[in-house]
Image 1 (cartoon, rainbow, N blue to C red):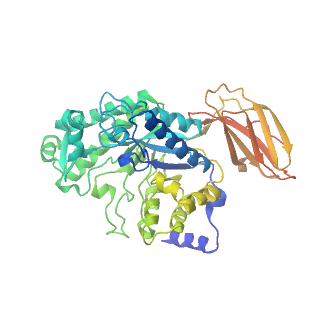
Image 2 (cartoon, rainbow, N blue to C red):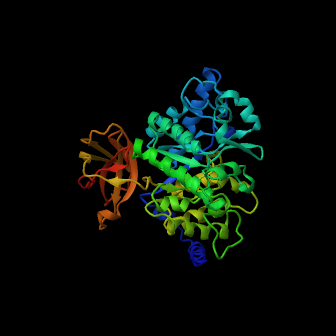
Image 3 (cartoon, rainbow, N blue to C red):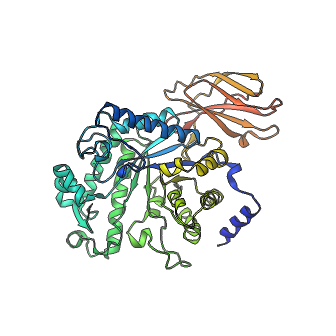
Length: 474
């Protein structure tokens, strides 16, 4: 509660944290394909539909780039159907209106390439255990996981789920993860709904429990099932491509807190999801808890999450869709960003993309105040093996500085980063102010008497940044 009061004092005096954007910060958005909520708005049943789908993605990514977002969580698996060709599960119905129908291009390849062209990472958002409601399973027919793997699936409250207690479920999910990680140049894989269903007391796994429970308490056995699968998937990803980040979107409240014993459902107690354990044991690189709440339902639980981080980090998921609901306003979202920056979270992810881009006030606030400058993914690191830009020249004109340089690094997808260091300041206090993606020239606005110094670095797809170039004095 003391932290909430401190934040209130800062805001009362007009002191918010947006003037000190961190160099390392996850700035993400969930791009929802389920029910075509964010994309696509049209079906790809002909060339015109395909091109319109691509054009829509172009526009979305352009807008995110302009606001200095650096990560897109693209929903690649919804409910047992996929946005890429697979030998295991069918094409998504949301691409063409029909399960299993090829849209004529590979949307996952397309969005990965377009993200990389804009200097953004693309993480494959993977809905883990749900595989469809009764109608979806019927429409999928023989292609449905329910039909192909009936021993692994359970029906509960009109929905079908892979049963976490069945040993074959882990192997099935691992085969999907292996396929996508091997086949695609993704930067991360993001596990959503990696838990038991809502109100899971009646989940029909009694026979599974009798067979495999080994007399452990039911709640503990269920938590062990989810943790075992998380660990296995993490290990598989890192075995295949160590640079691919593994994350999850757990419930917003990790566990019940003594000061808030009746706060509603929580990950550990309600759905057997011990995401804090995954972080502490380094089986999850970062977590994006879905913290779509206000006030005492938000701030104390941020503190609780940060305490679980280990070597990972937390980037709270913010429910900006709720700005359309009574009792919510823009200041609620900016307060949450401020609080996280002040209390050691490492960014935010917004749910969902269309709400972000259609809310001009929120978008403008992020673009002009909170995300004025670029930021790197928190896992970025400095490398002595990458040579920095050299032979740098600066051309002054009225109101601008144009930097040009040569690149000896040999990187195939370089991102050049420009830093500005105010006169009299140490280089460690330099601010990342601009980036150039693959082009060895960059123009920025500057005053007539710019006395700052600058330097350049180059950054690669493995999140390695070169040492600084020689100091640049315009």
